[in-house]
Image (cartoon, one colour):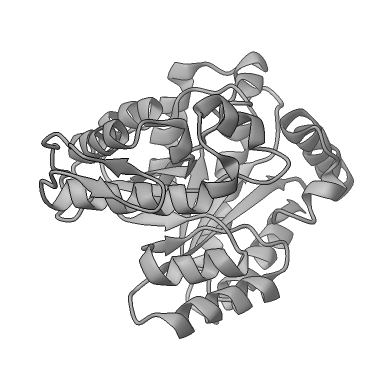
Length: 313
């Protein structure tokens, strides 16, 4: 199992005492502690440092970690320009880019799509068209493109990524439609179901529908604290500030865990048993310096999950 870290790049975290330059230092420290990947989120409604800009800086400051988006909302950007930007980040990182993508979430994303000029009702077709277009631009020089919702009679020459075929593209989502689409056209799966049994069921559906390799990953919001009640309060504040919803509501949608290292590790293990191979950890706290303090604790989780079965603790 591999582990990733989502950088705390939102305006709320920065106003709580973080700095944009410190994010790069966090990424370097996470690499030193054994994290396999560093991720940045995307949003128009919740202000944050633009993820592809941030990942470019991280790629230059690190040596081995994957840099990825969790998740990028392609509807916010011109598809052709984004293909060139992603290829550029892949080149700068020397082939270390992974692109997590999503189609937005009902009740959260409608205004963002309206601002971007994309019909929310066609968001899935739009996303699939964008990904298909990216791959065509990365692998050839198409003169035109005609999908379900995207149509271009002329396309410019495009820069090629570091890896043949371009960076892997992972889909965020666990609806039946998302599972079918993951099996058909995506390289990885990045959901956040609160129940490991649902994760196992979704992964089984994907694997039954394709012979292609699909990386099974998980987005997990976490806060390590020996006092679970205090951890719950921290996650509650994070949920309210980030989503304007209670932790109880968010926990029915997203996988979350707090408690001592052993409890966090046990939760990770349940998802590993369900098939997850790459766990992306988001520290659910707005407290100043929270991510820096949590990193060595999360590193203990990582080290424990890498021990052979039966090894001494």
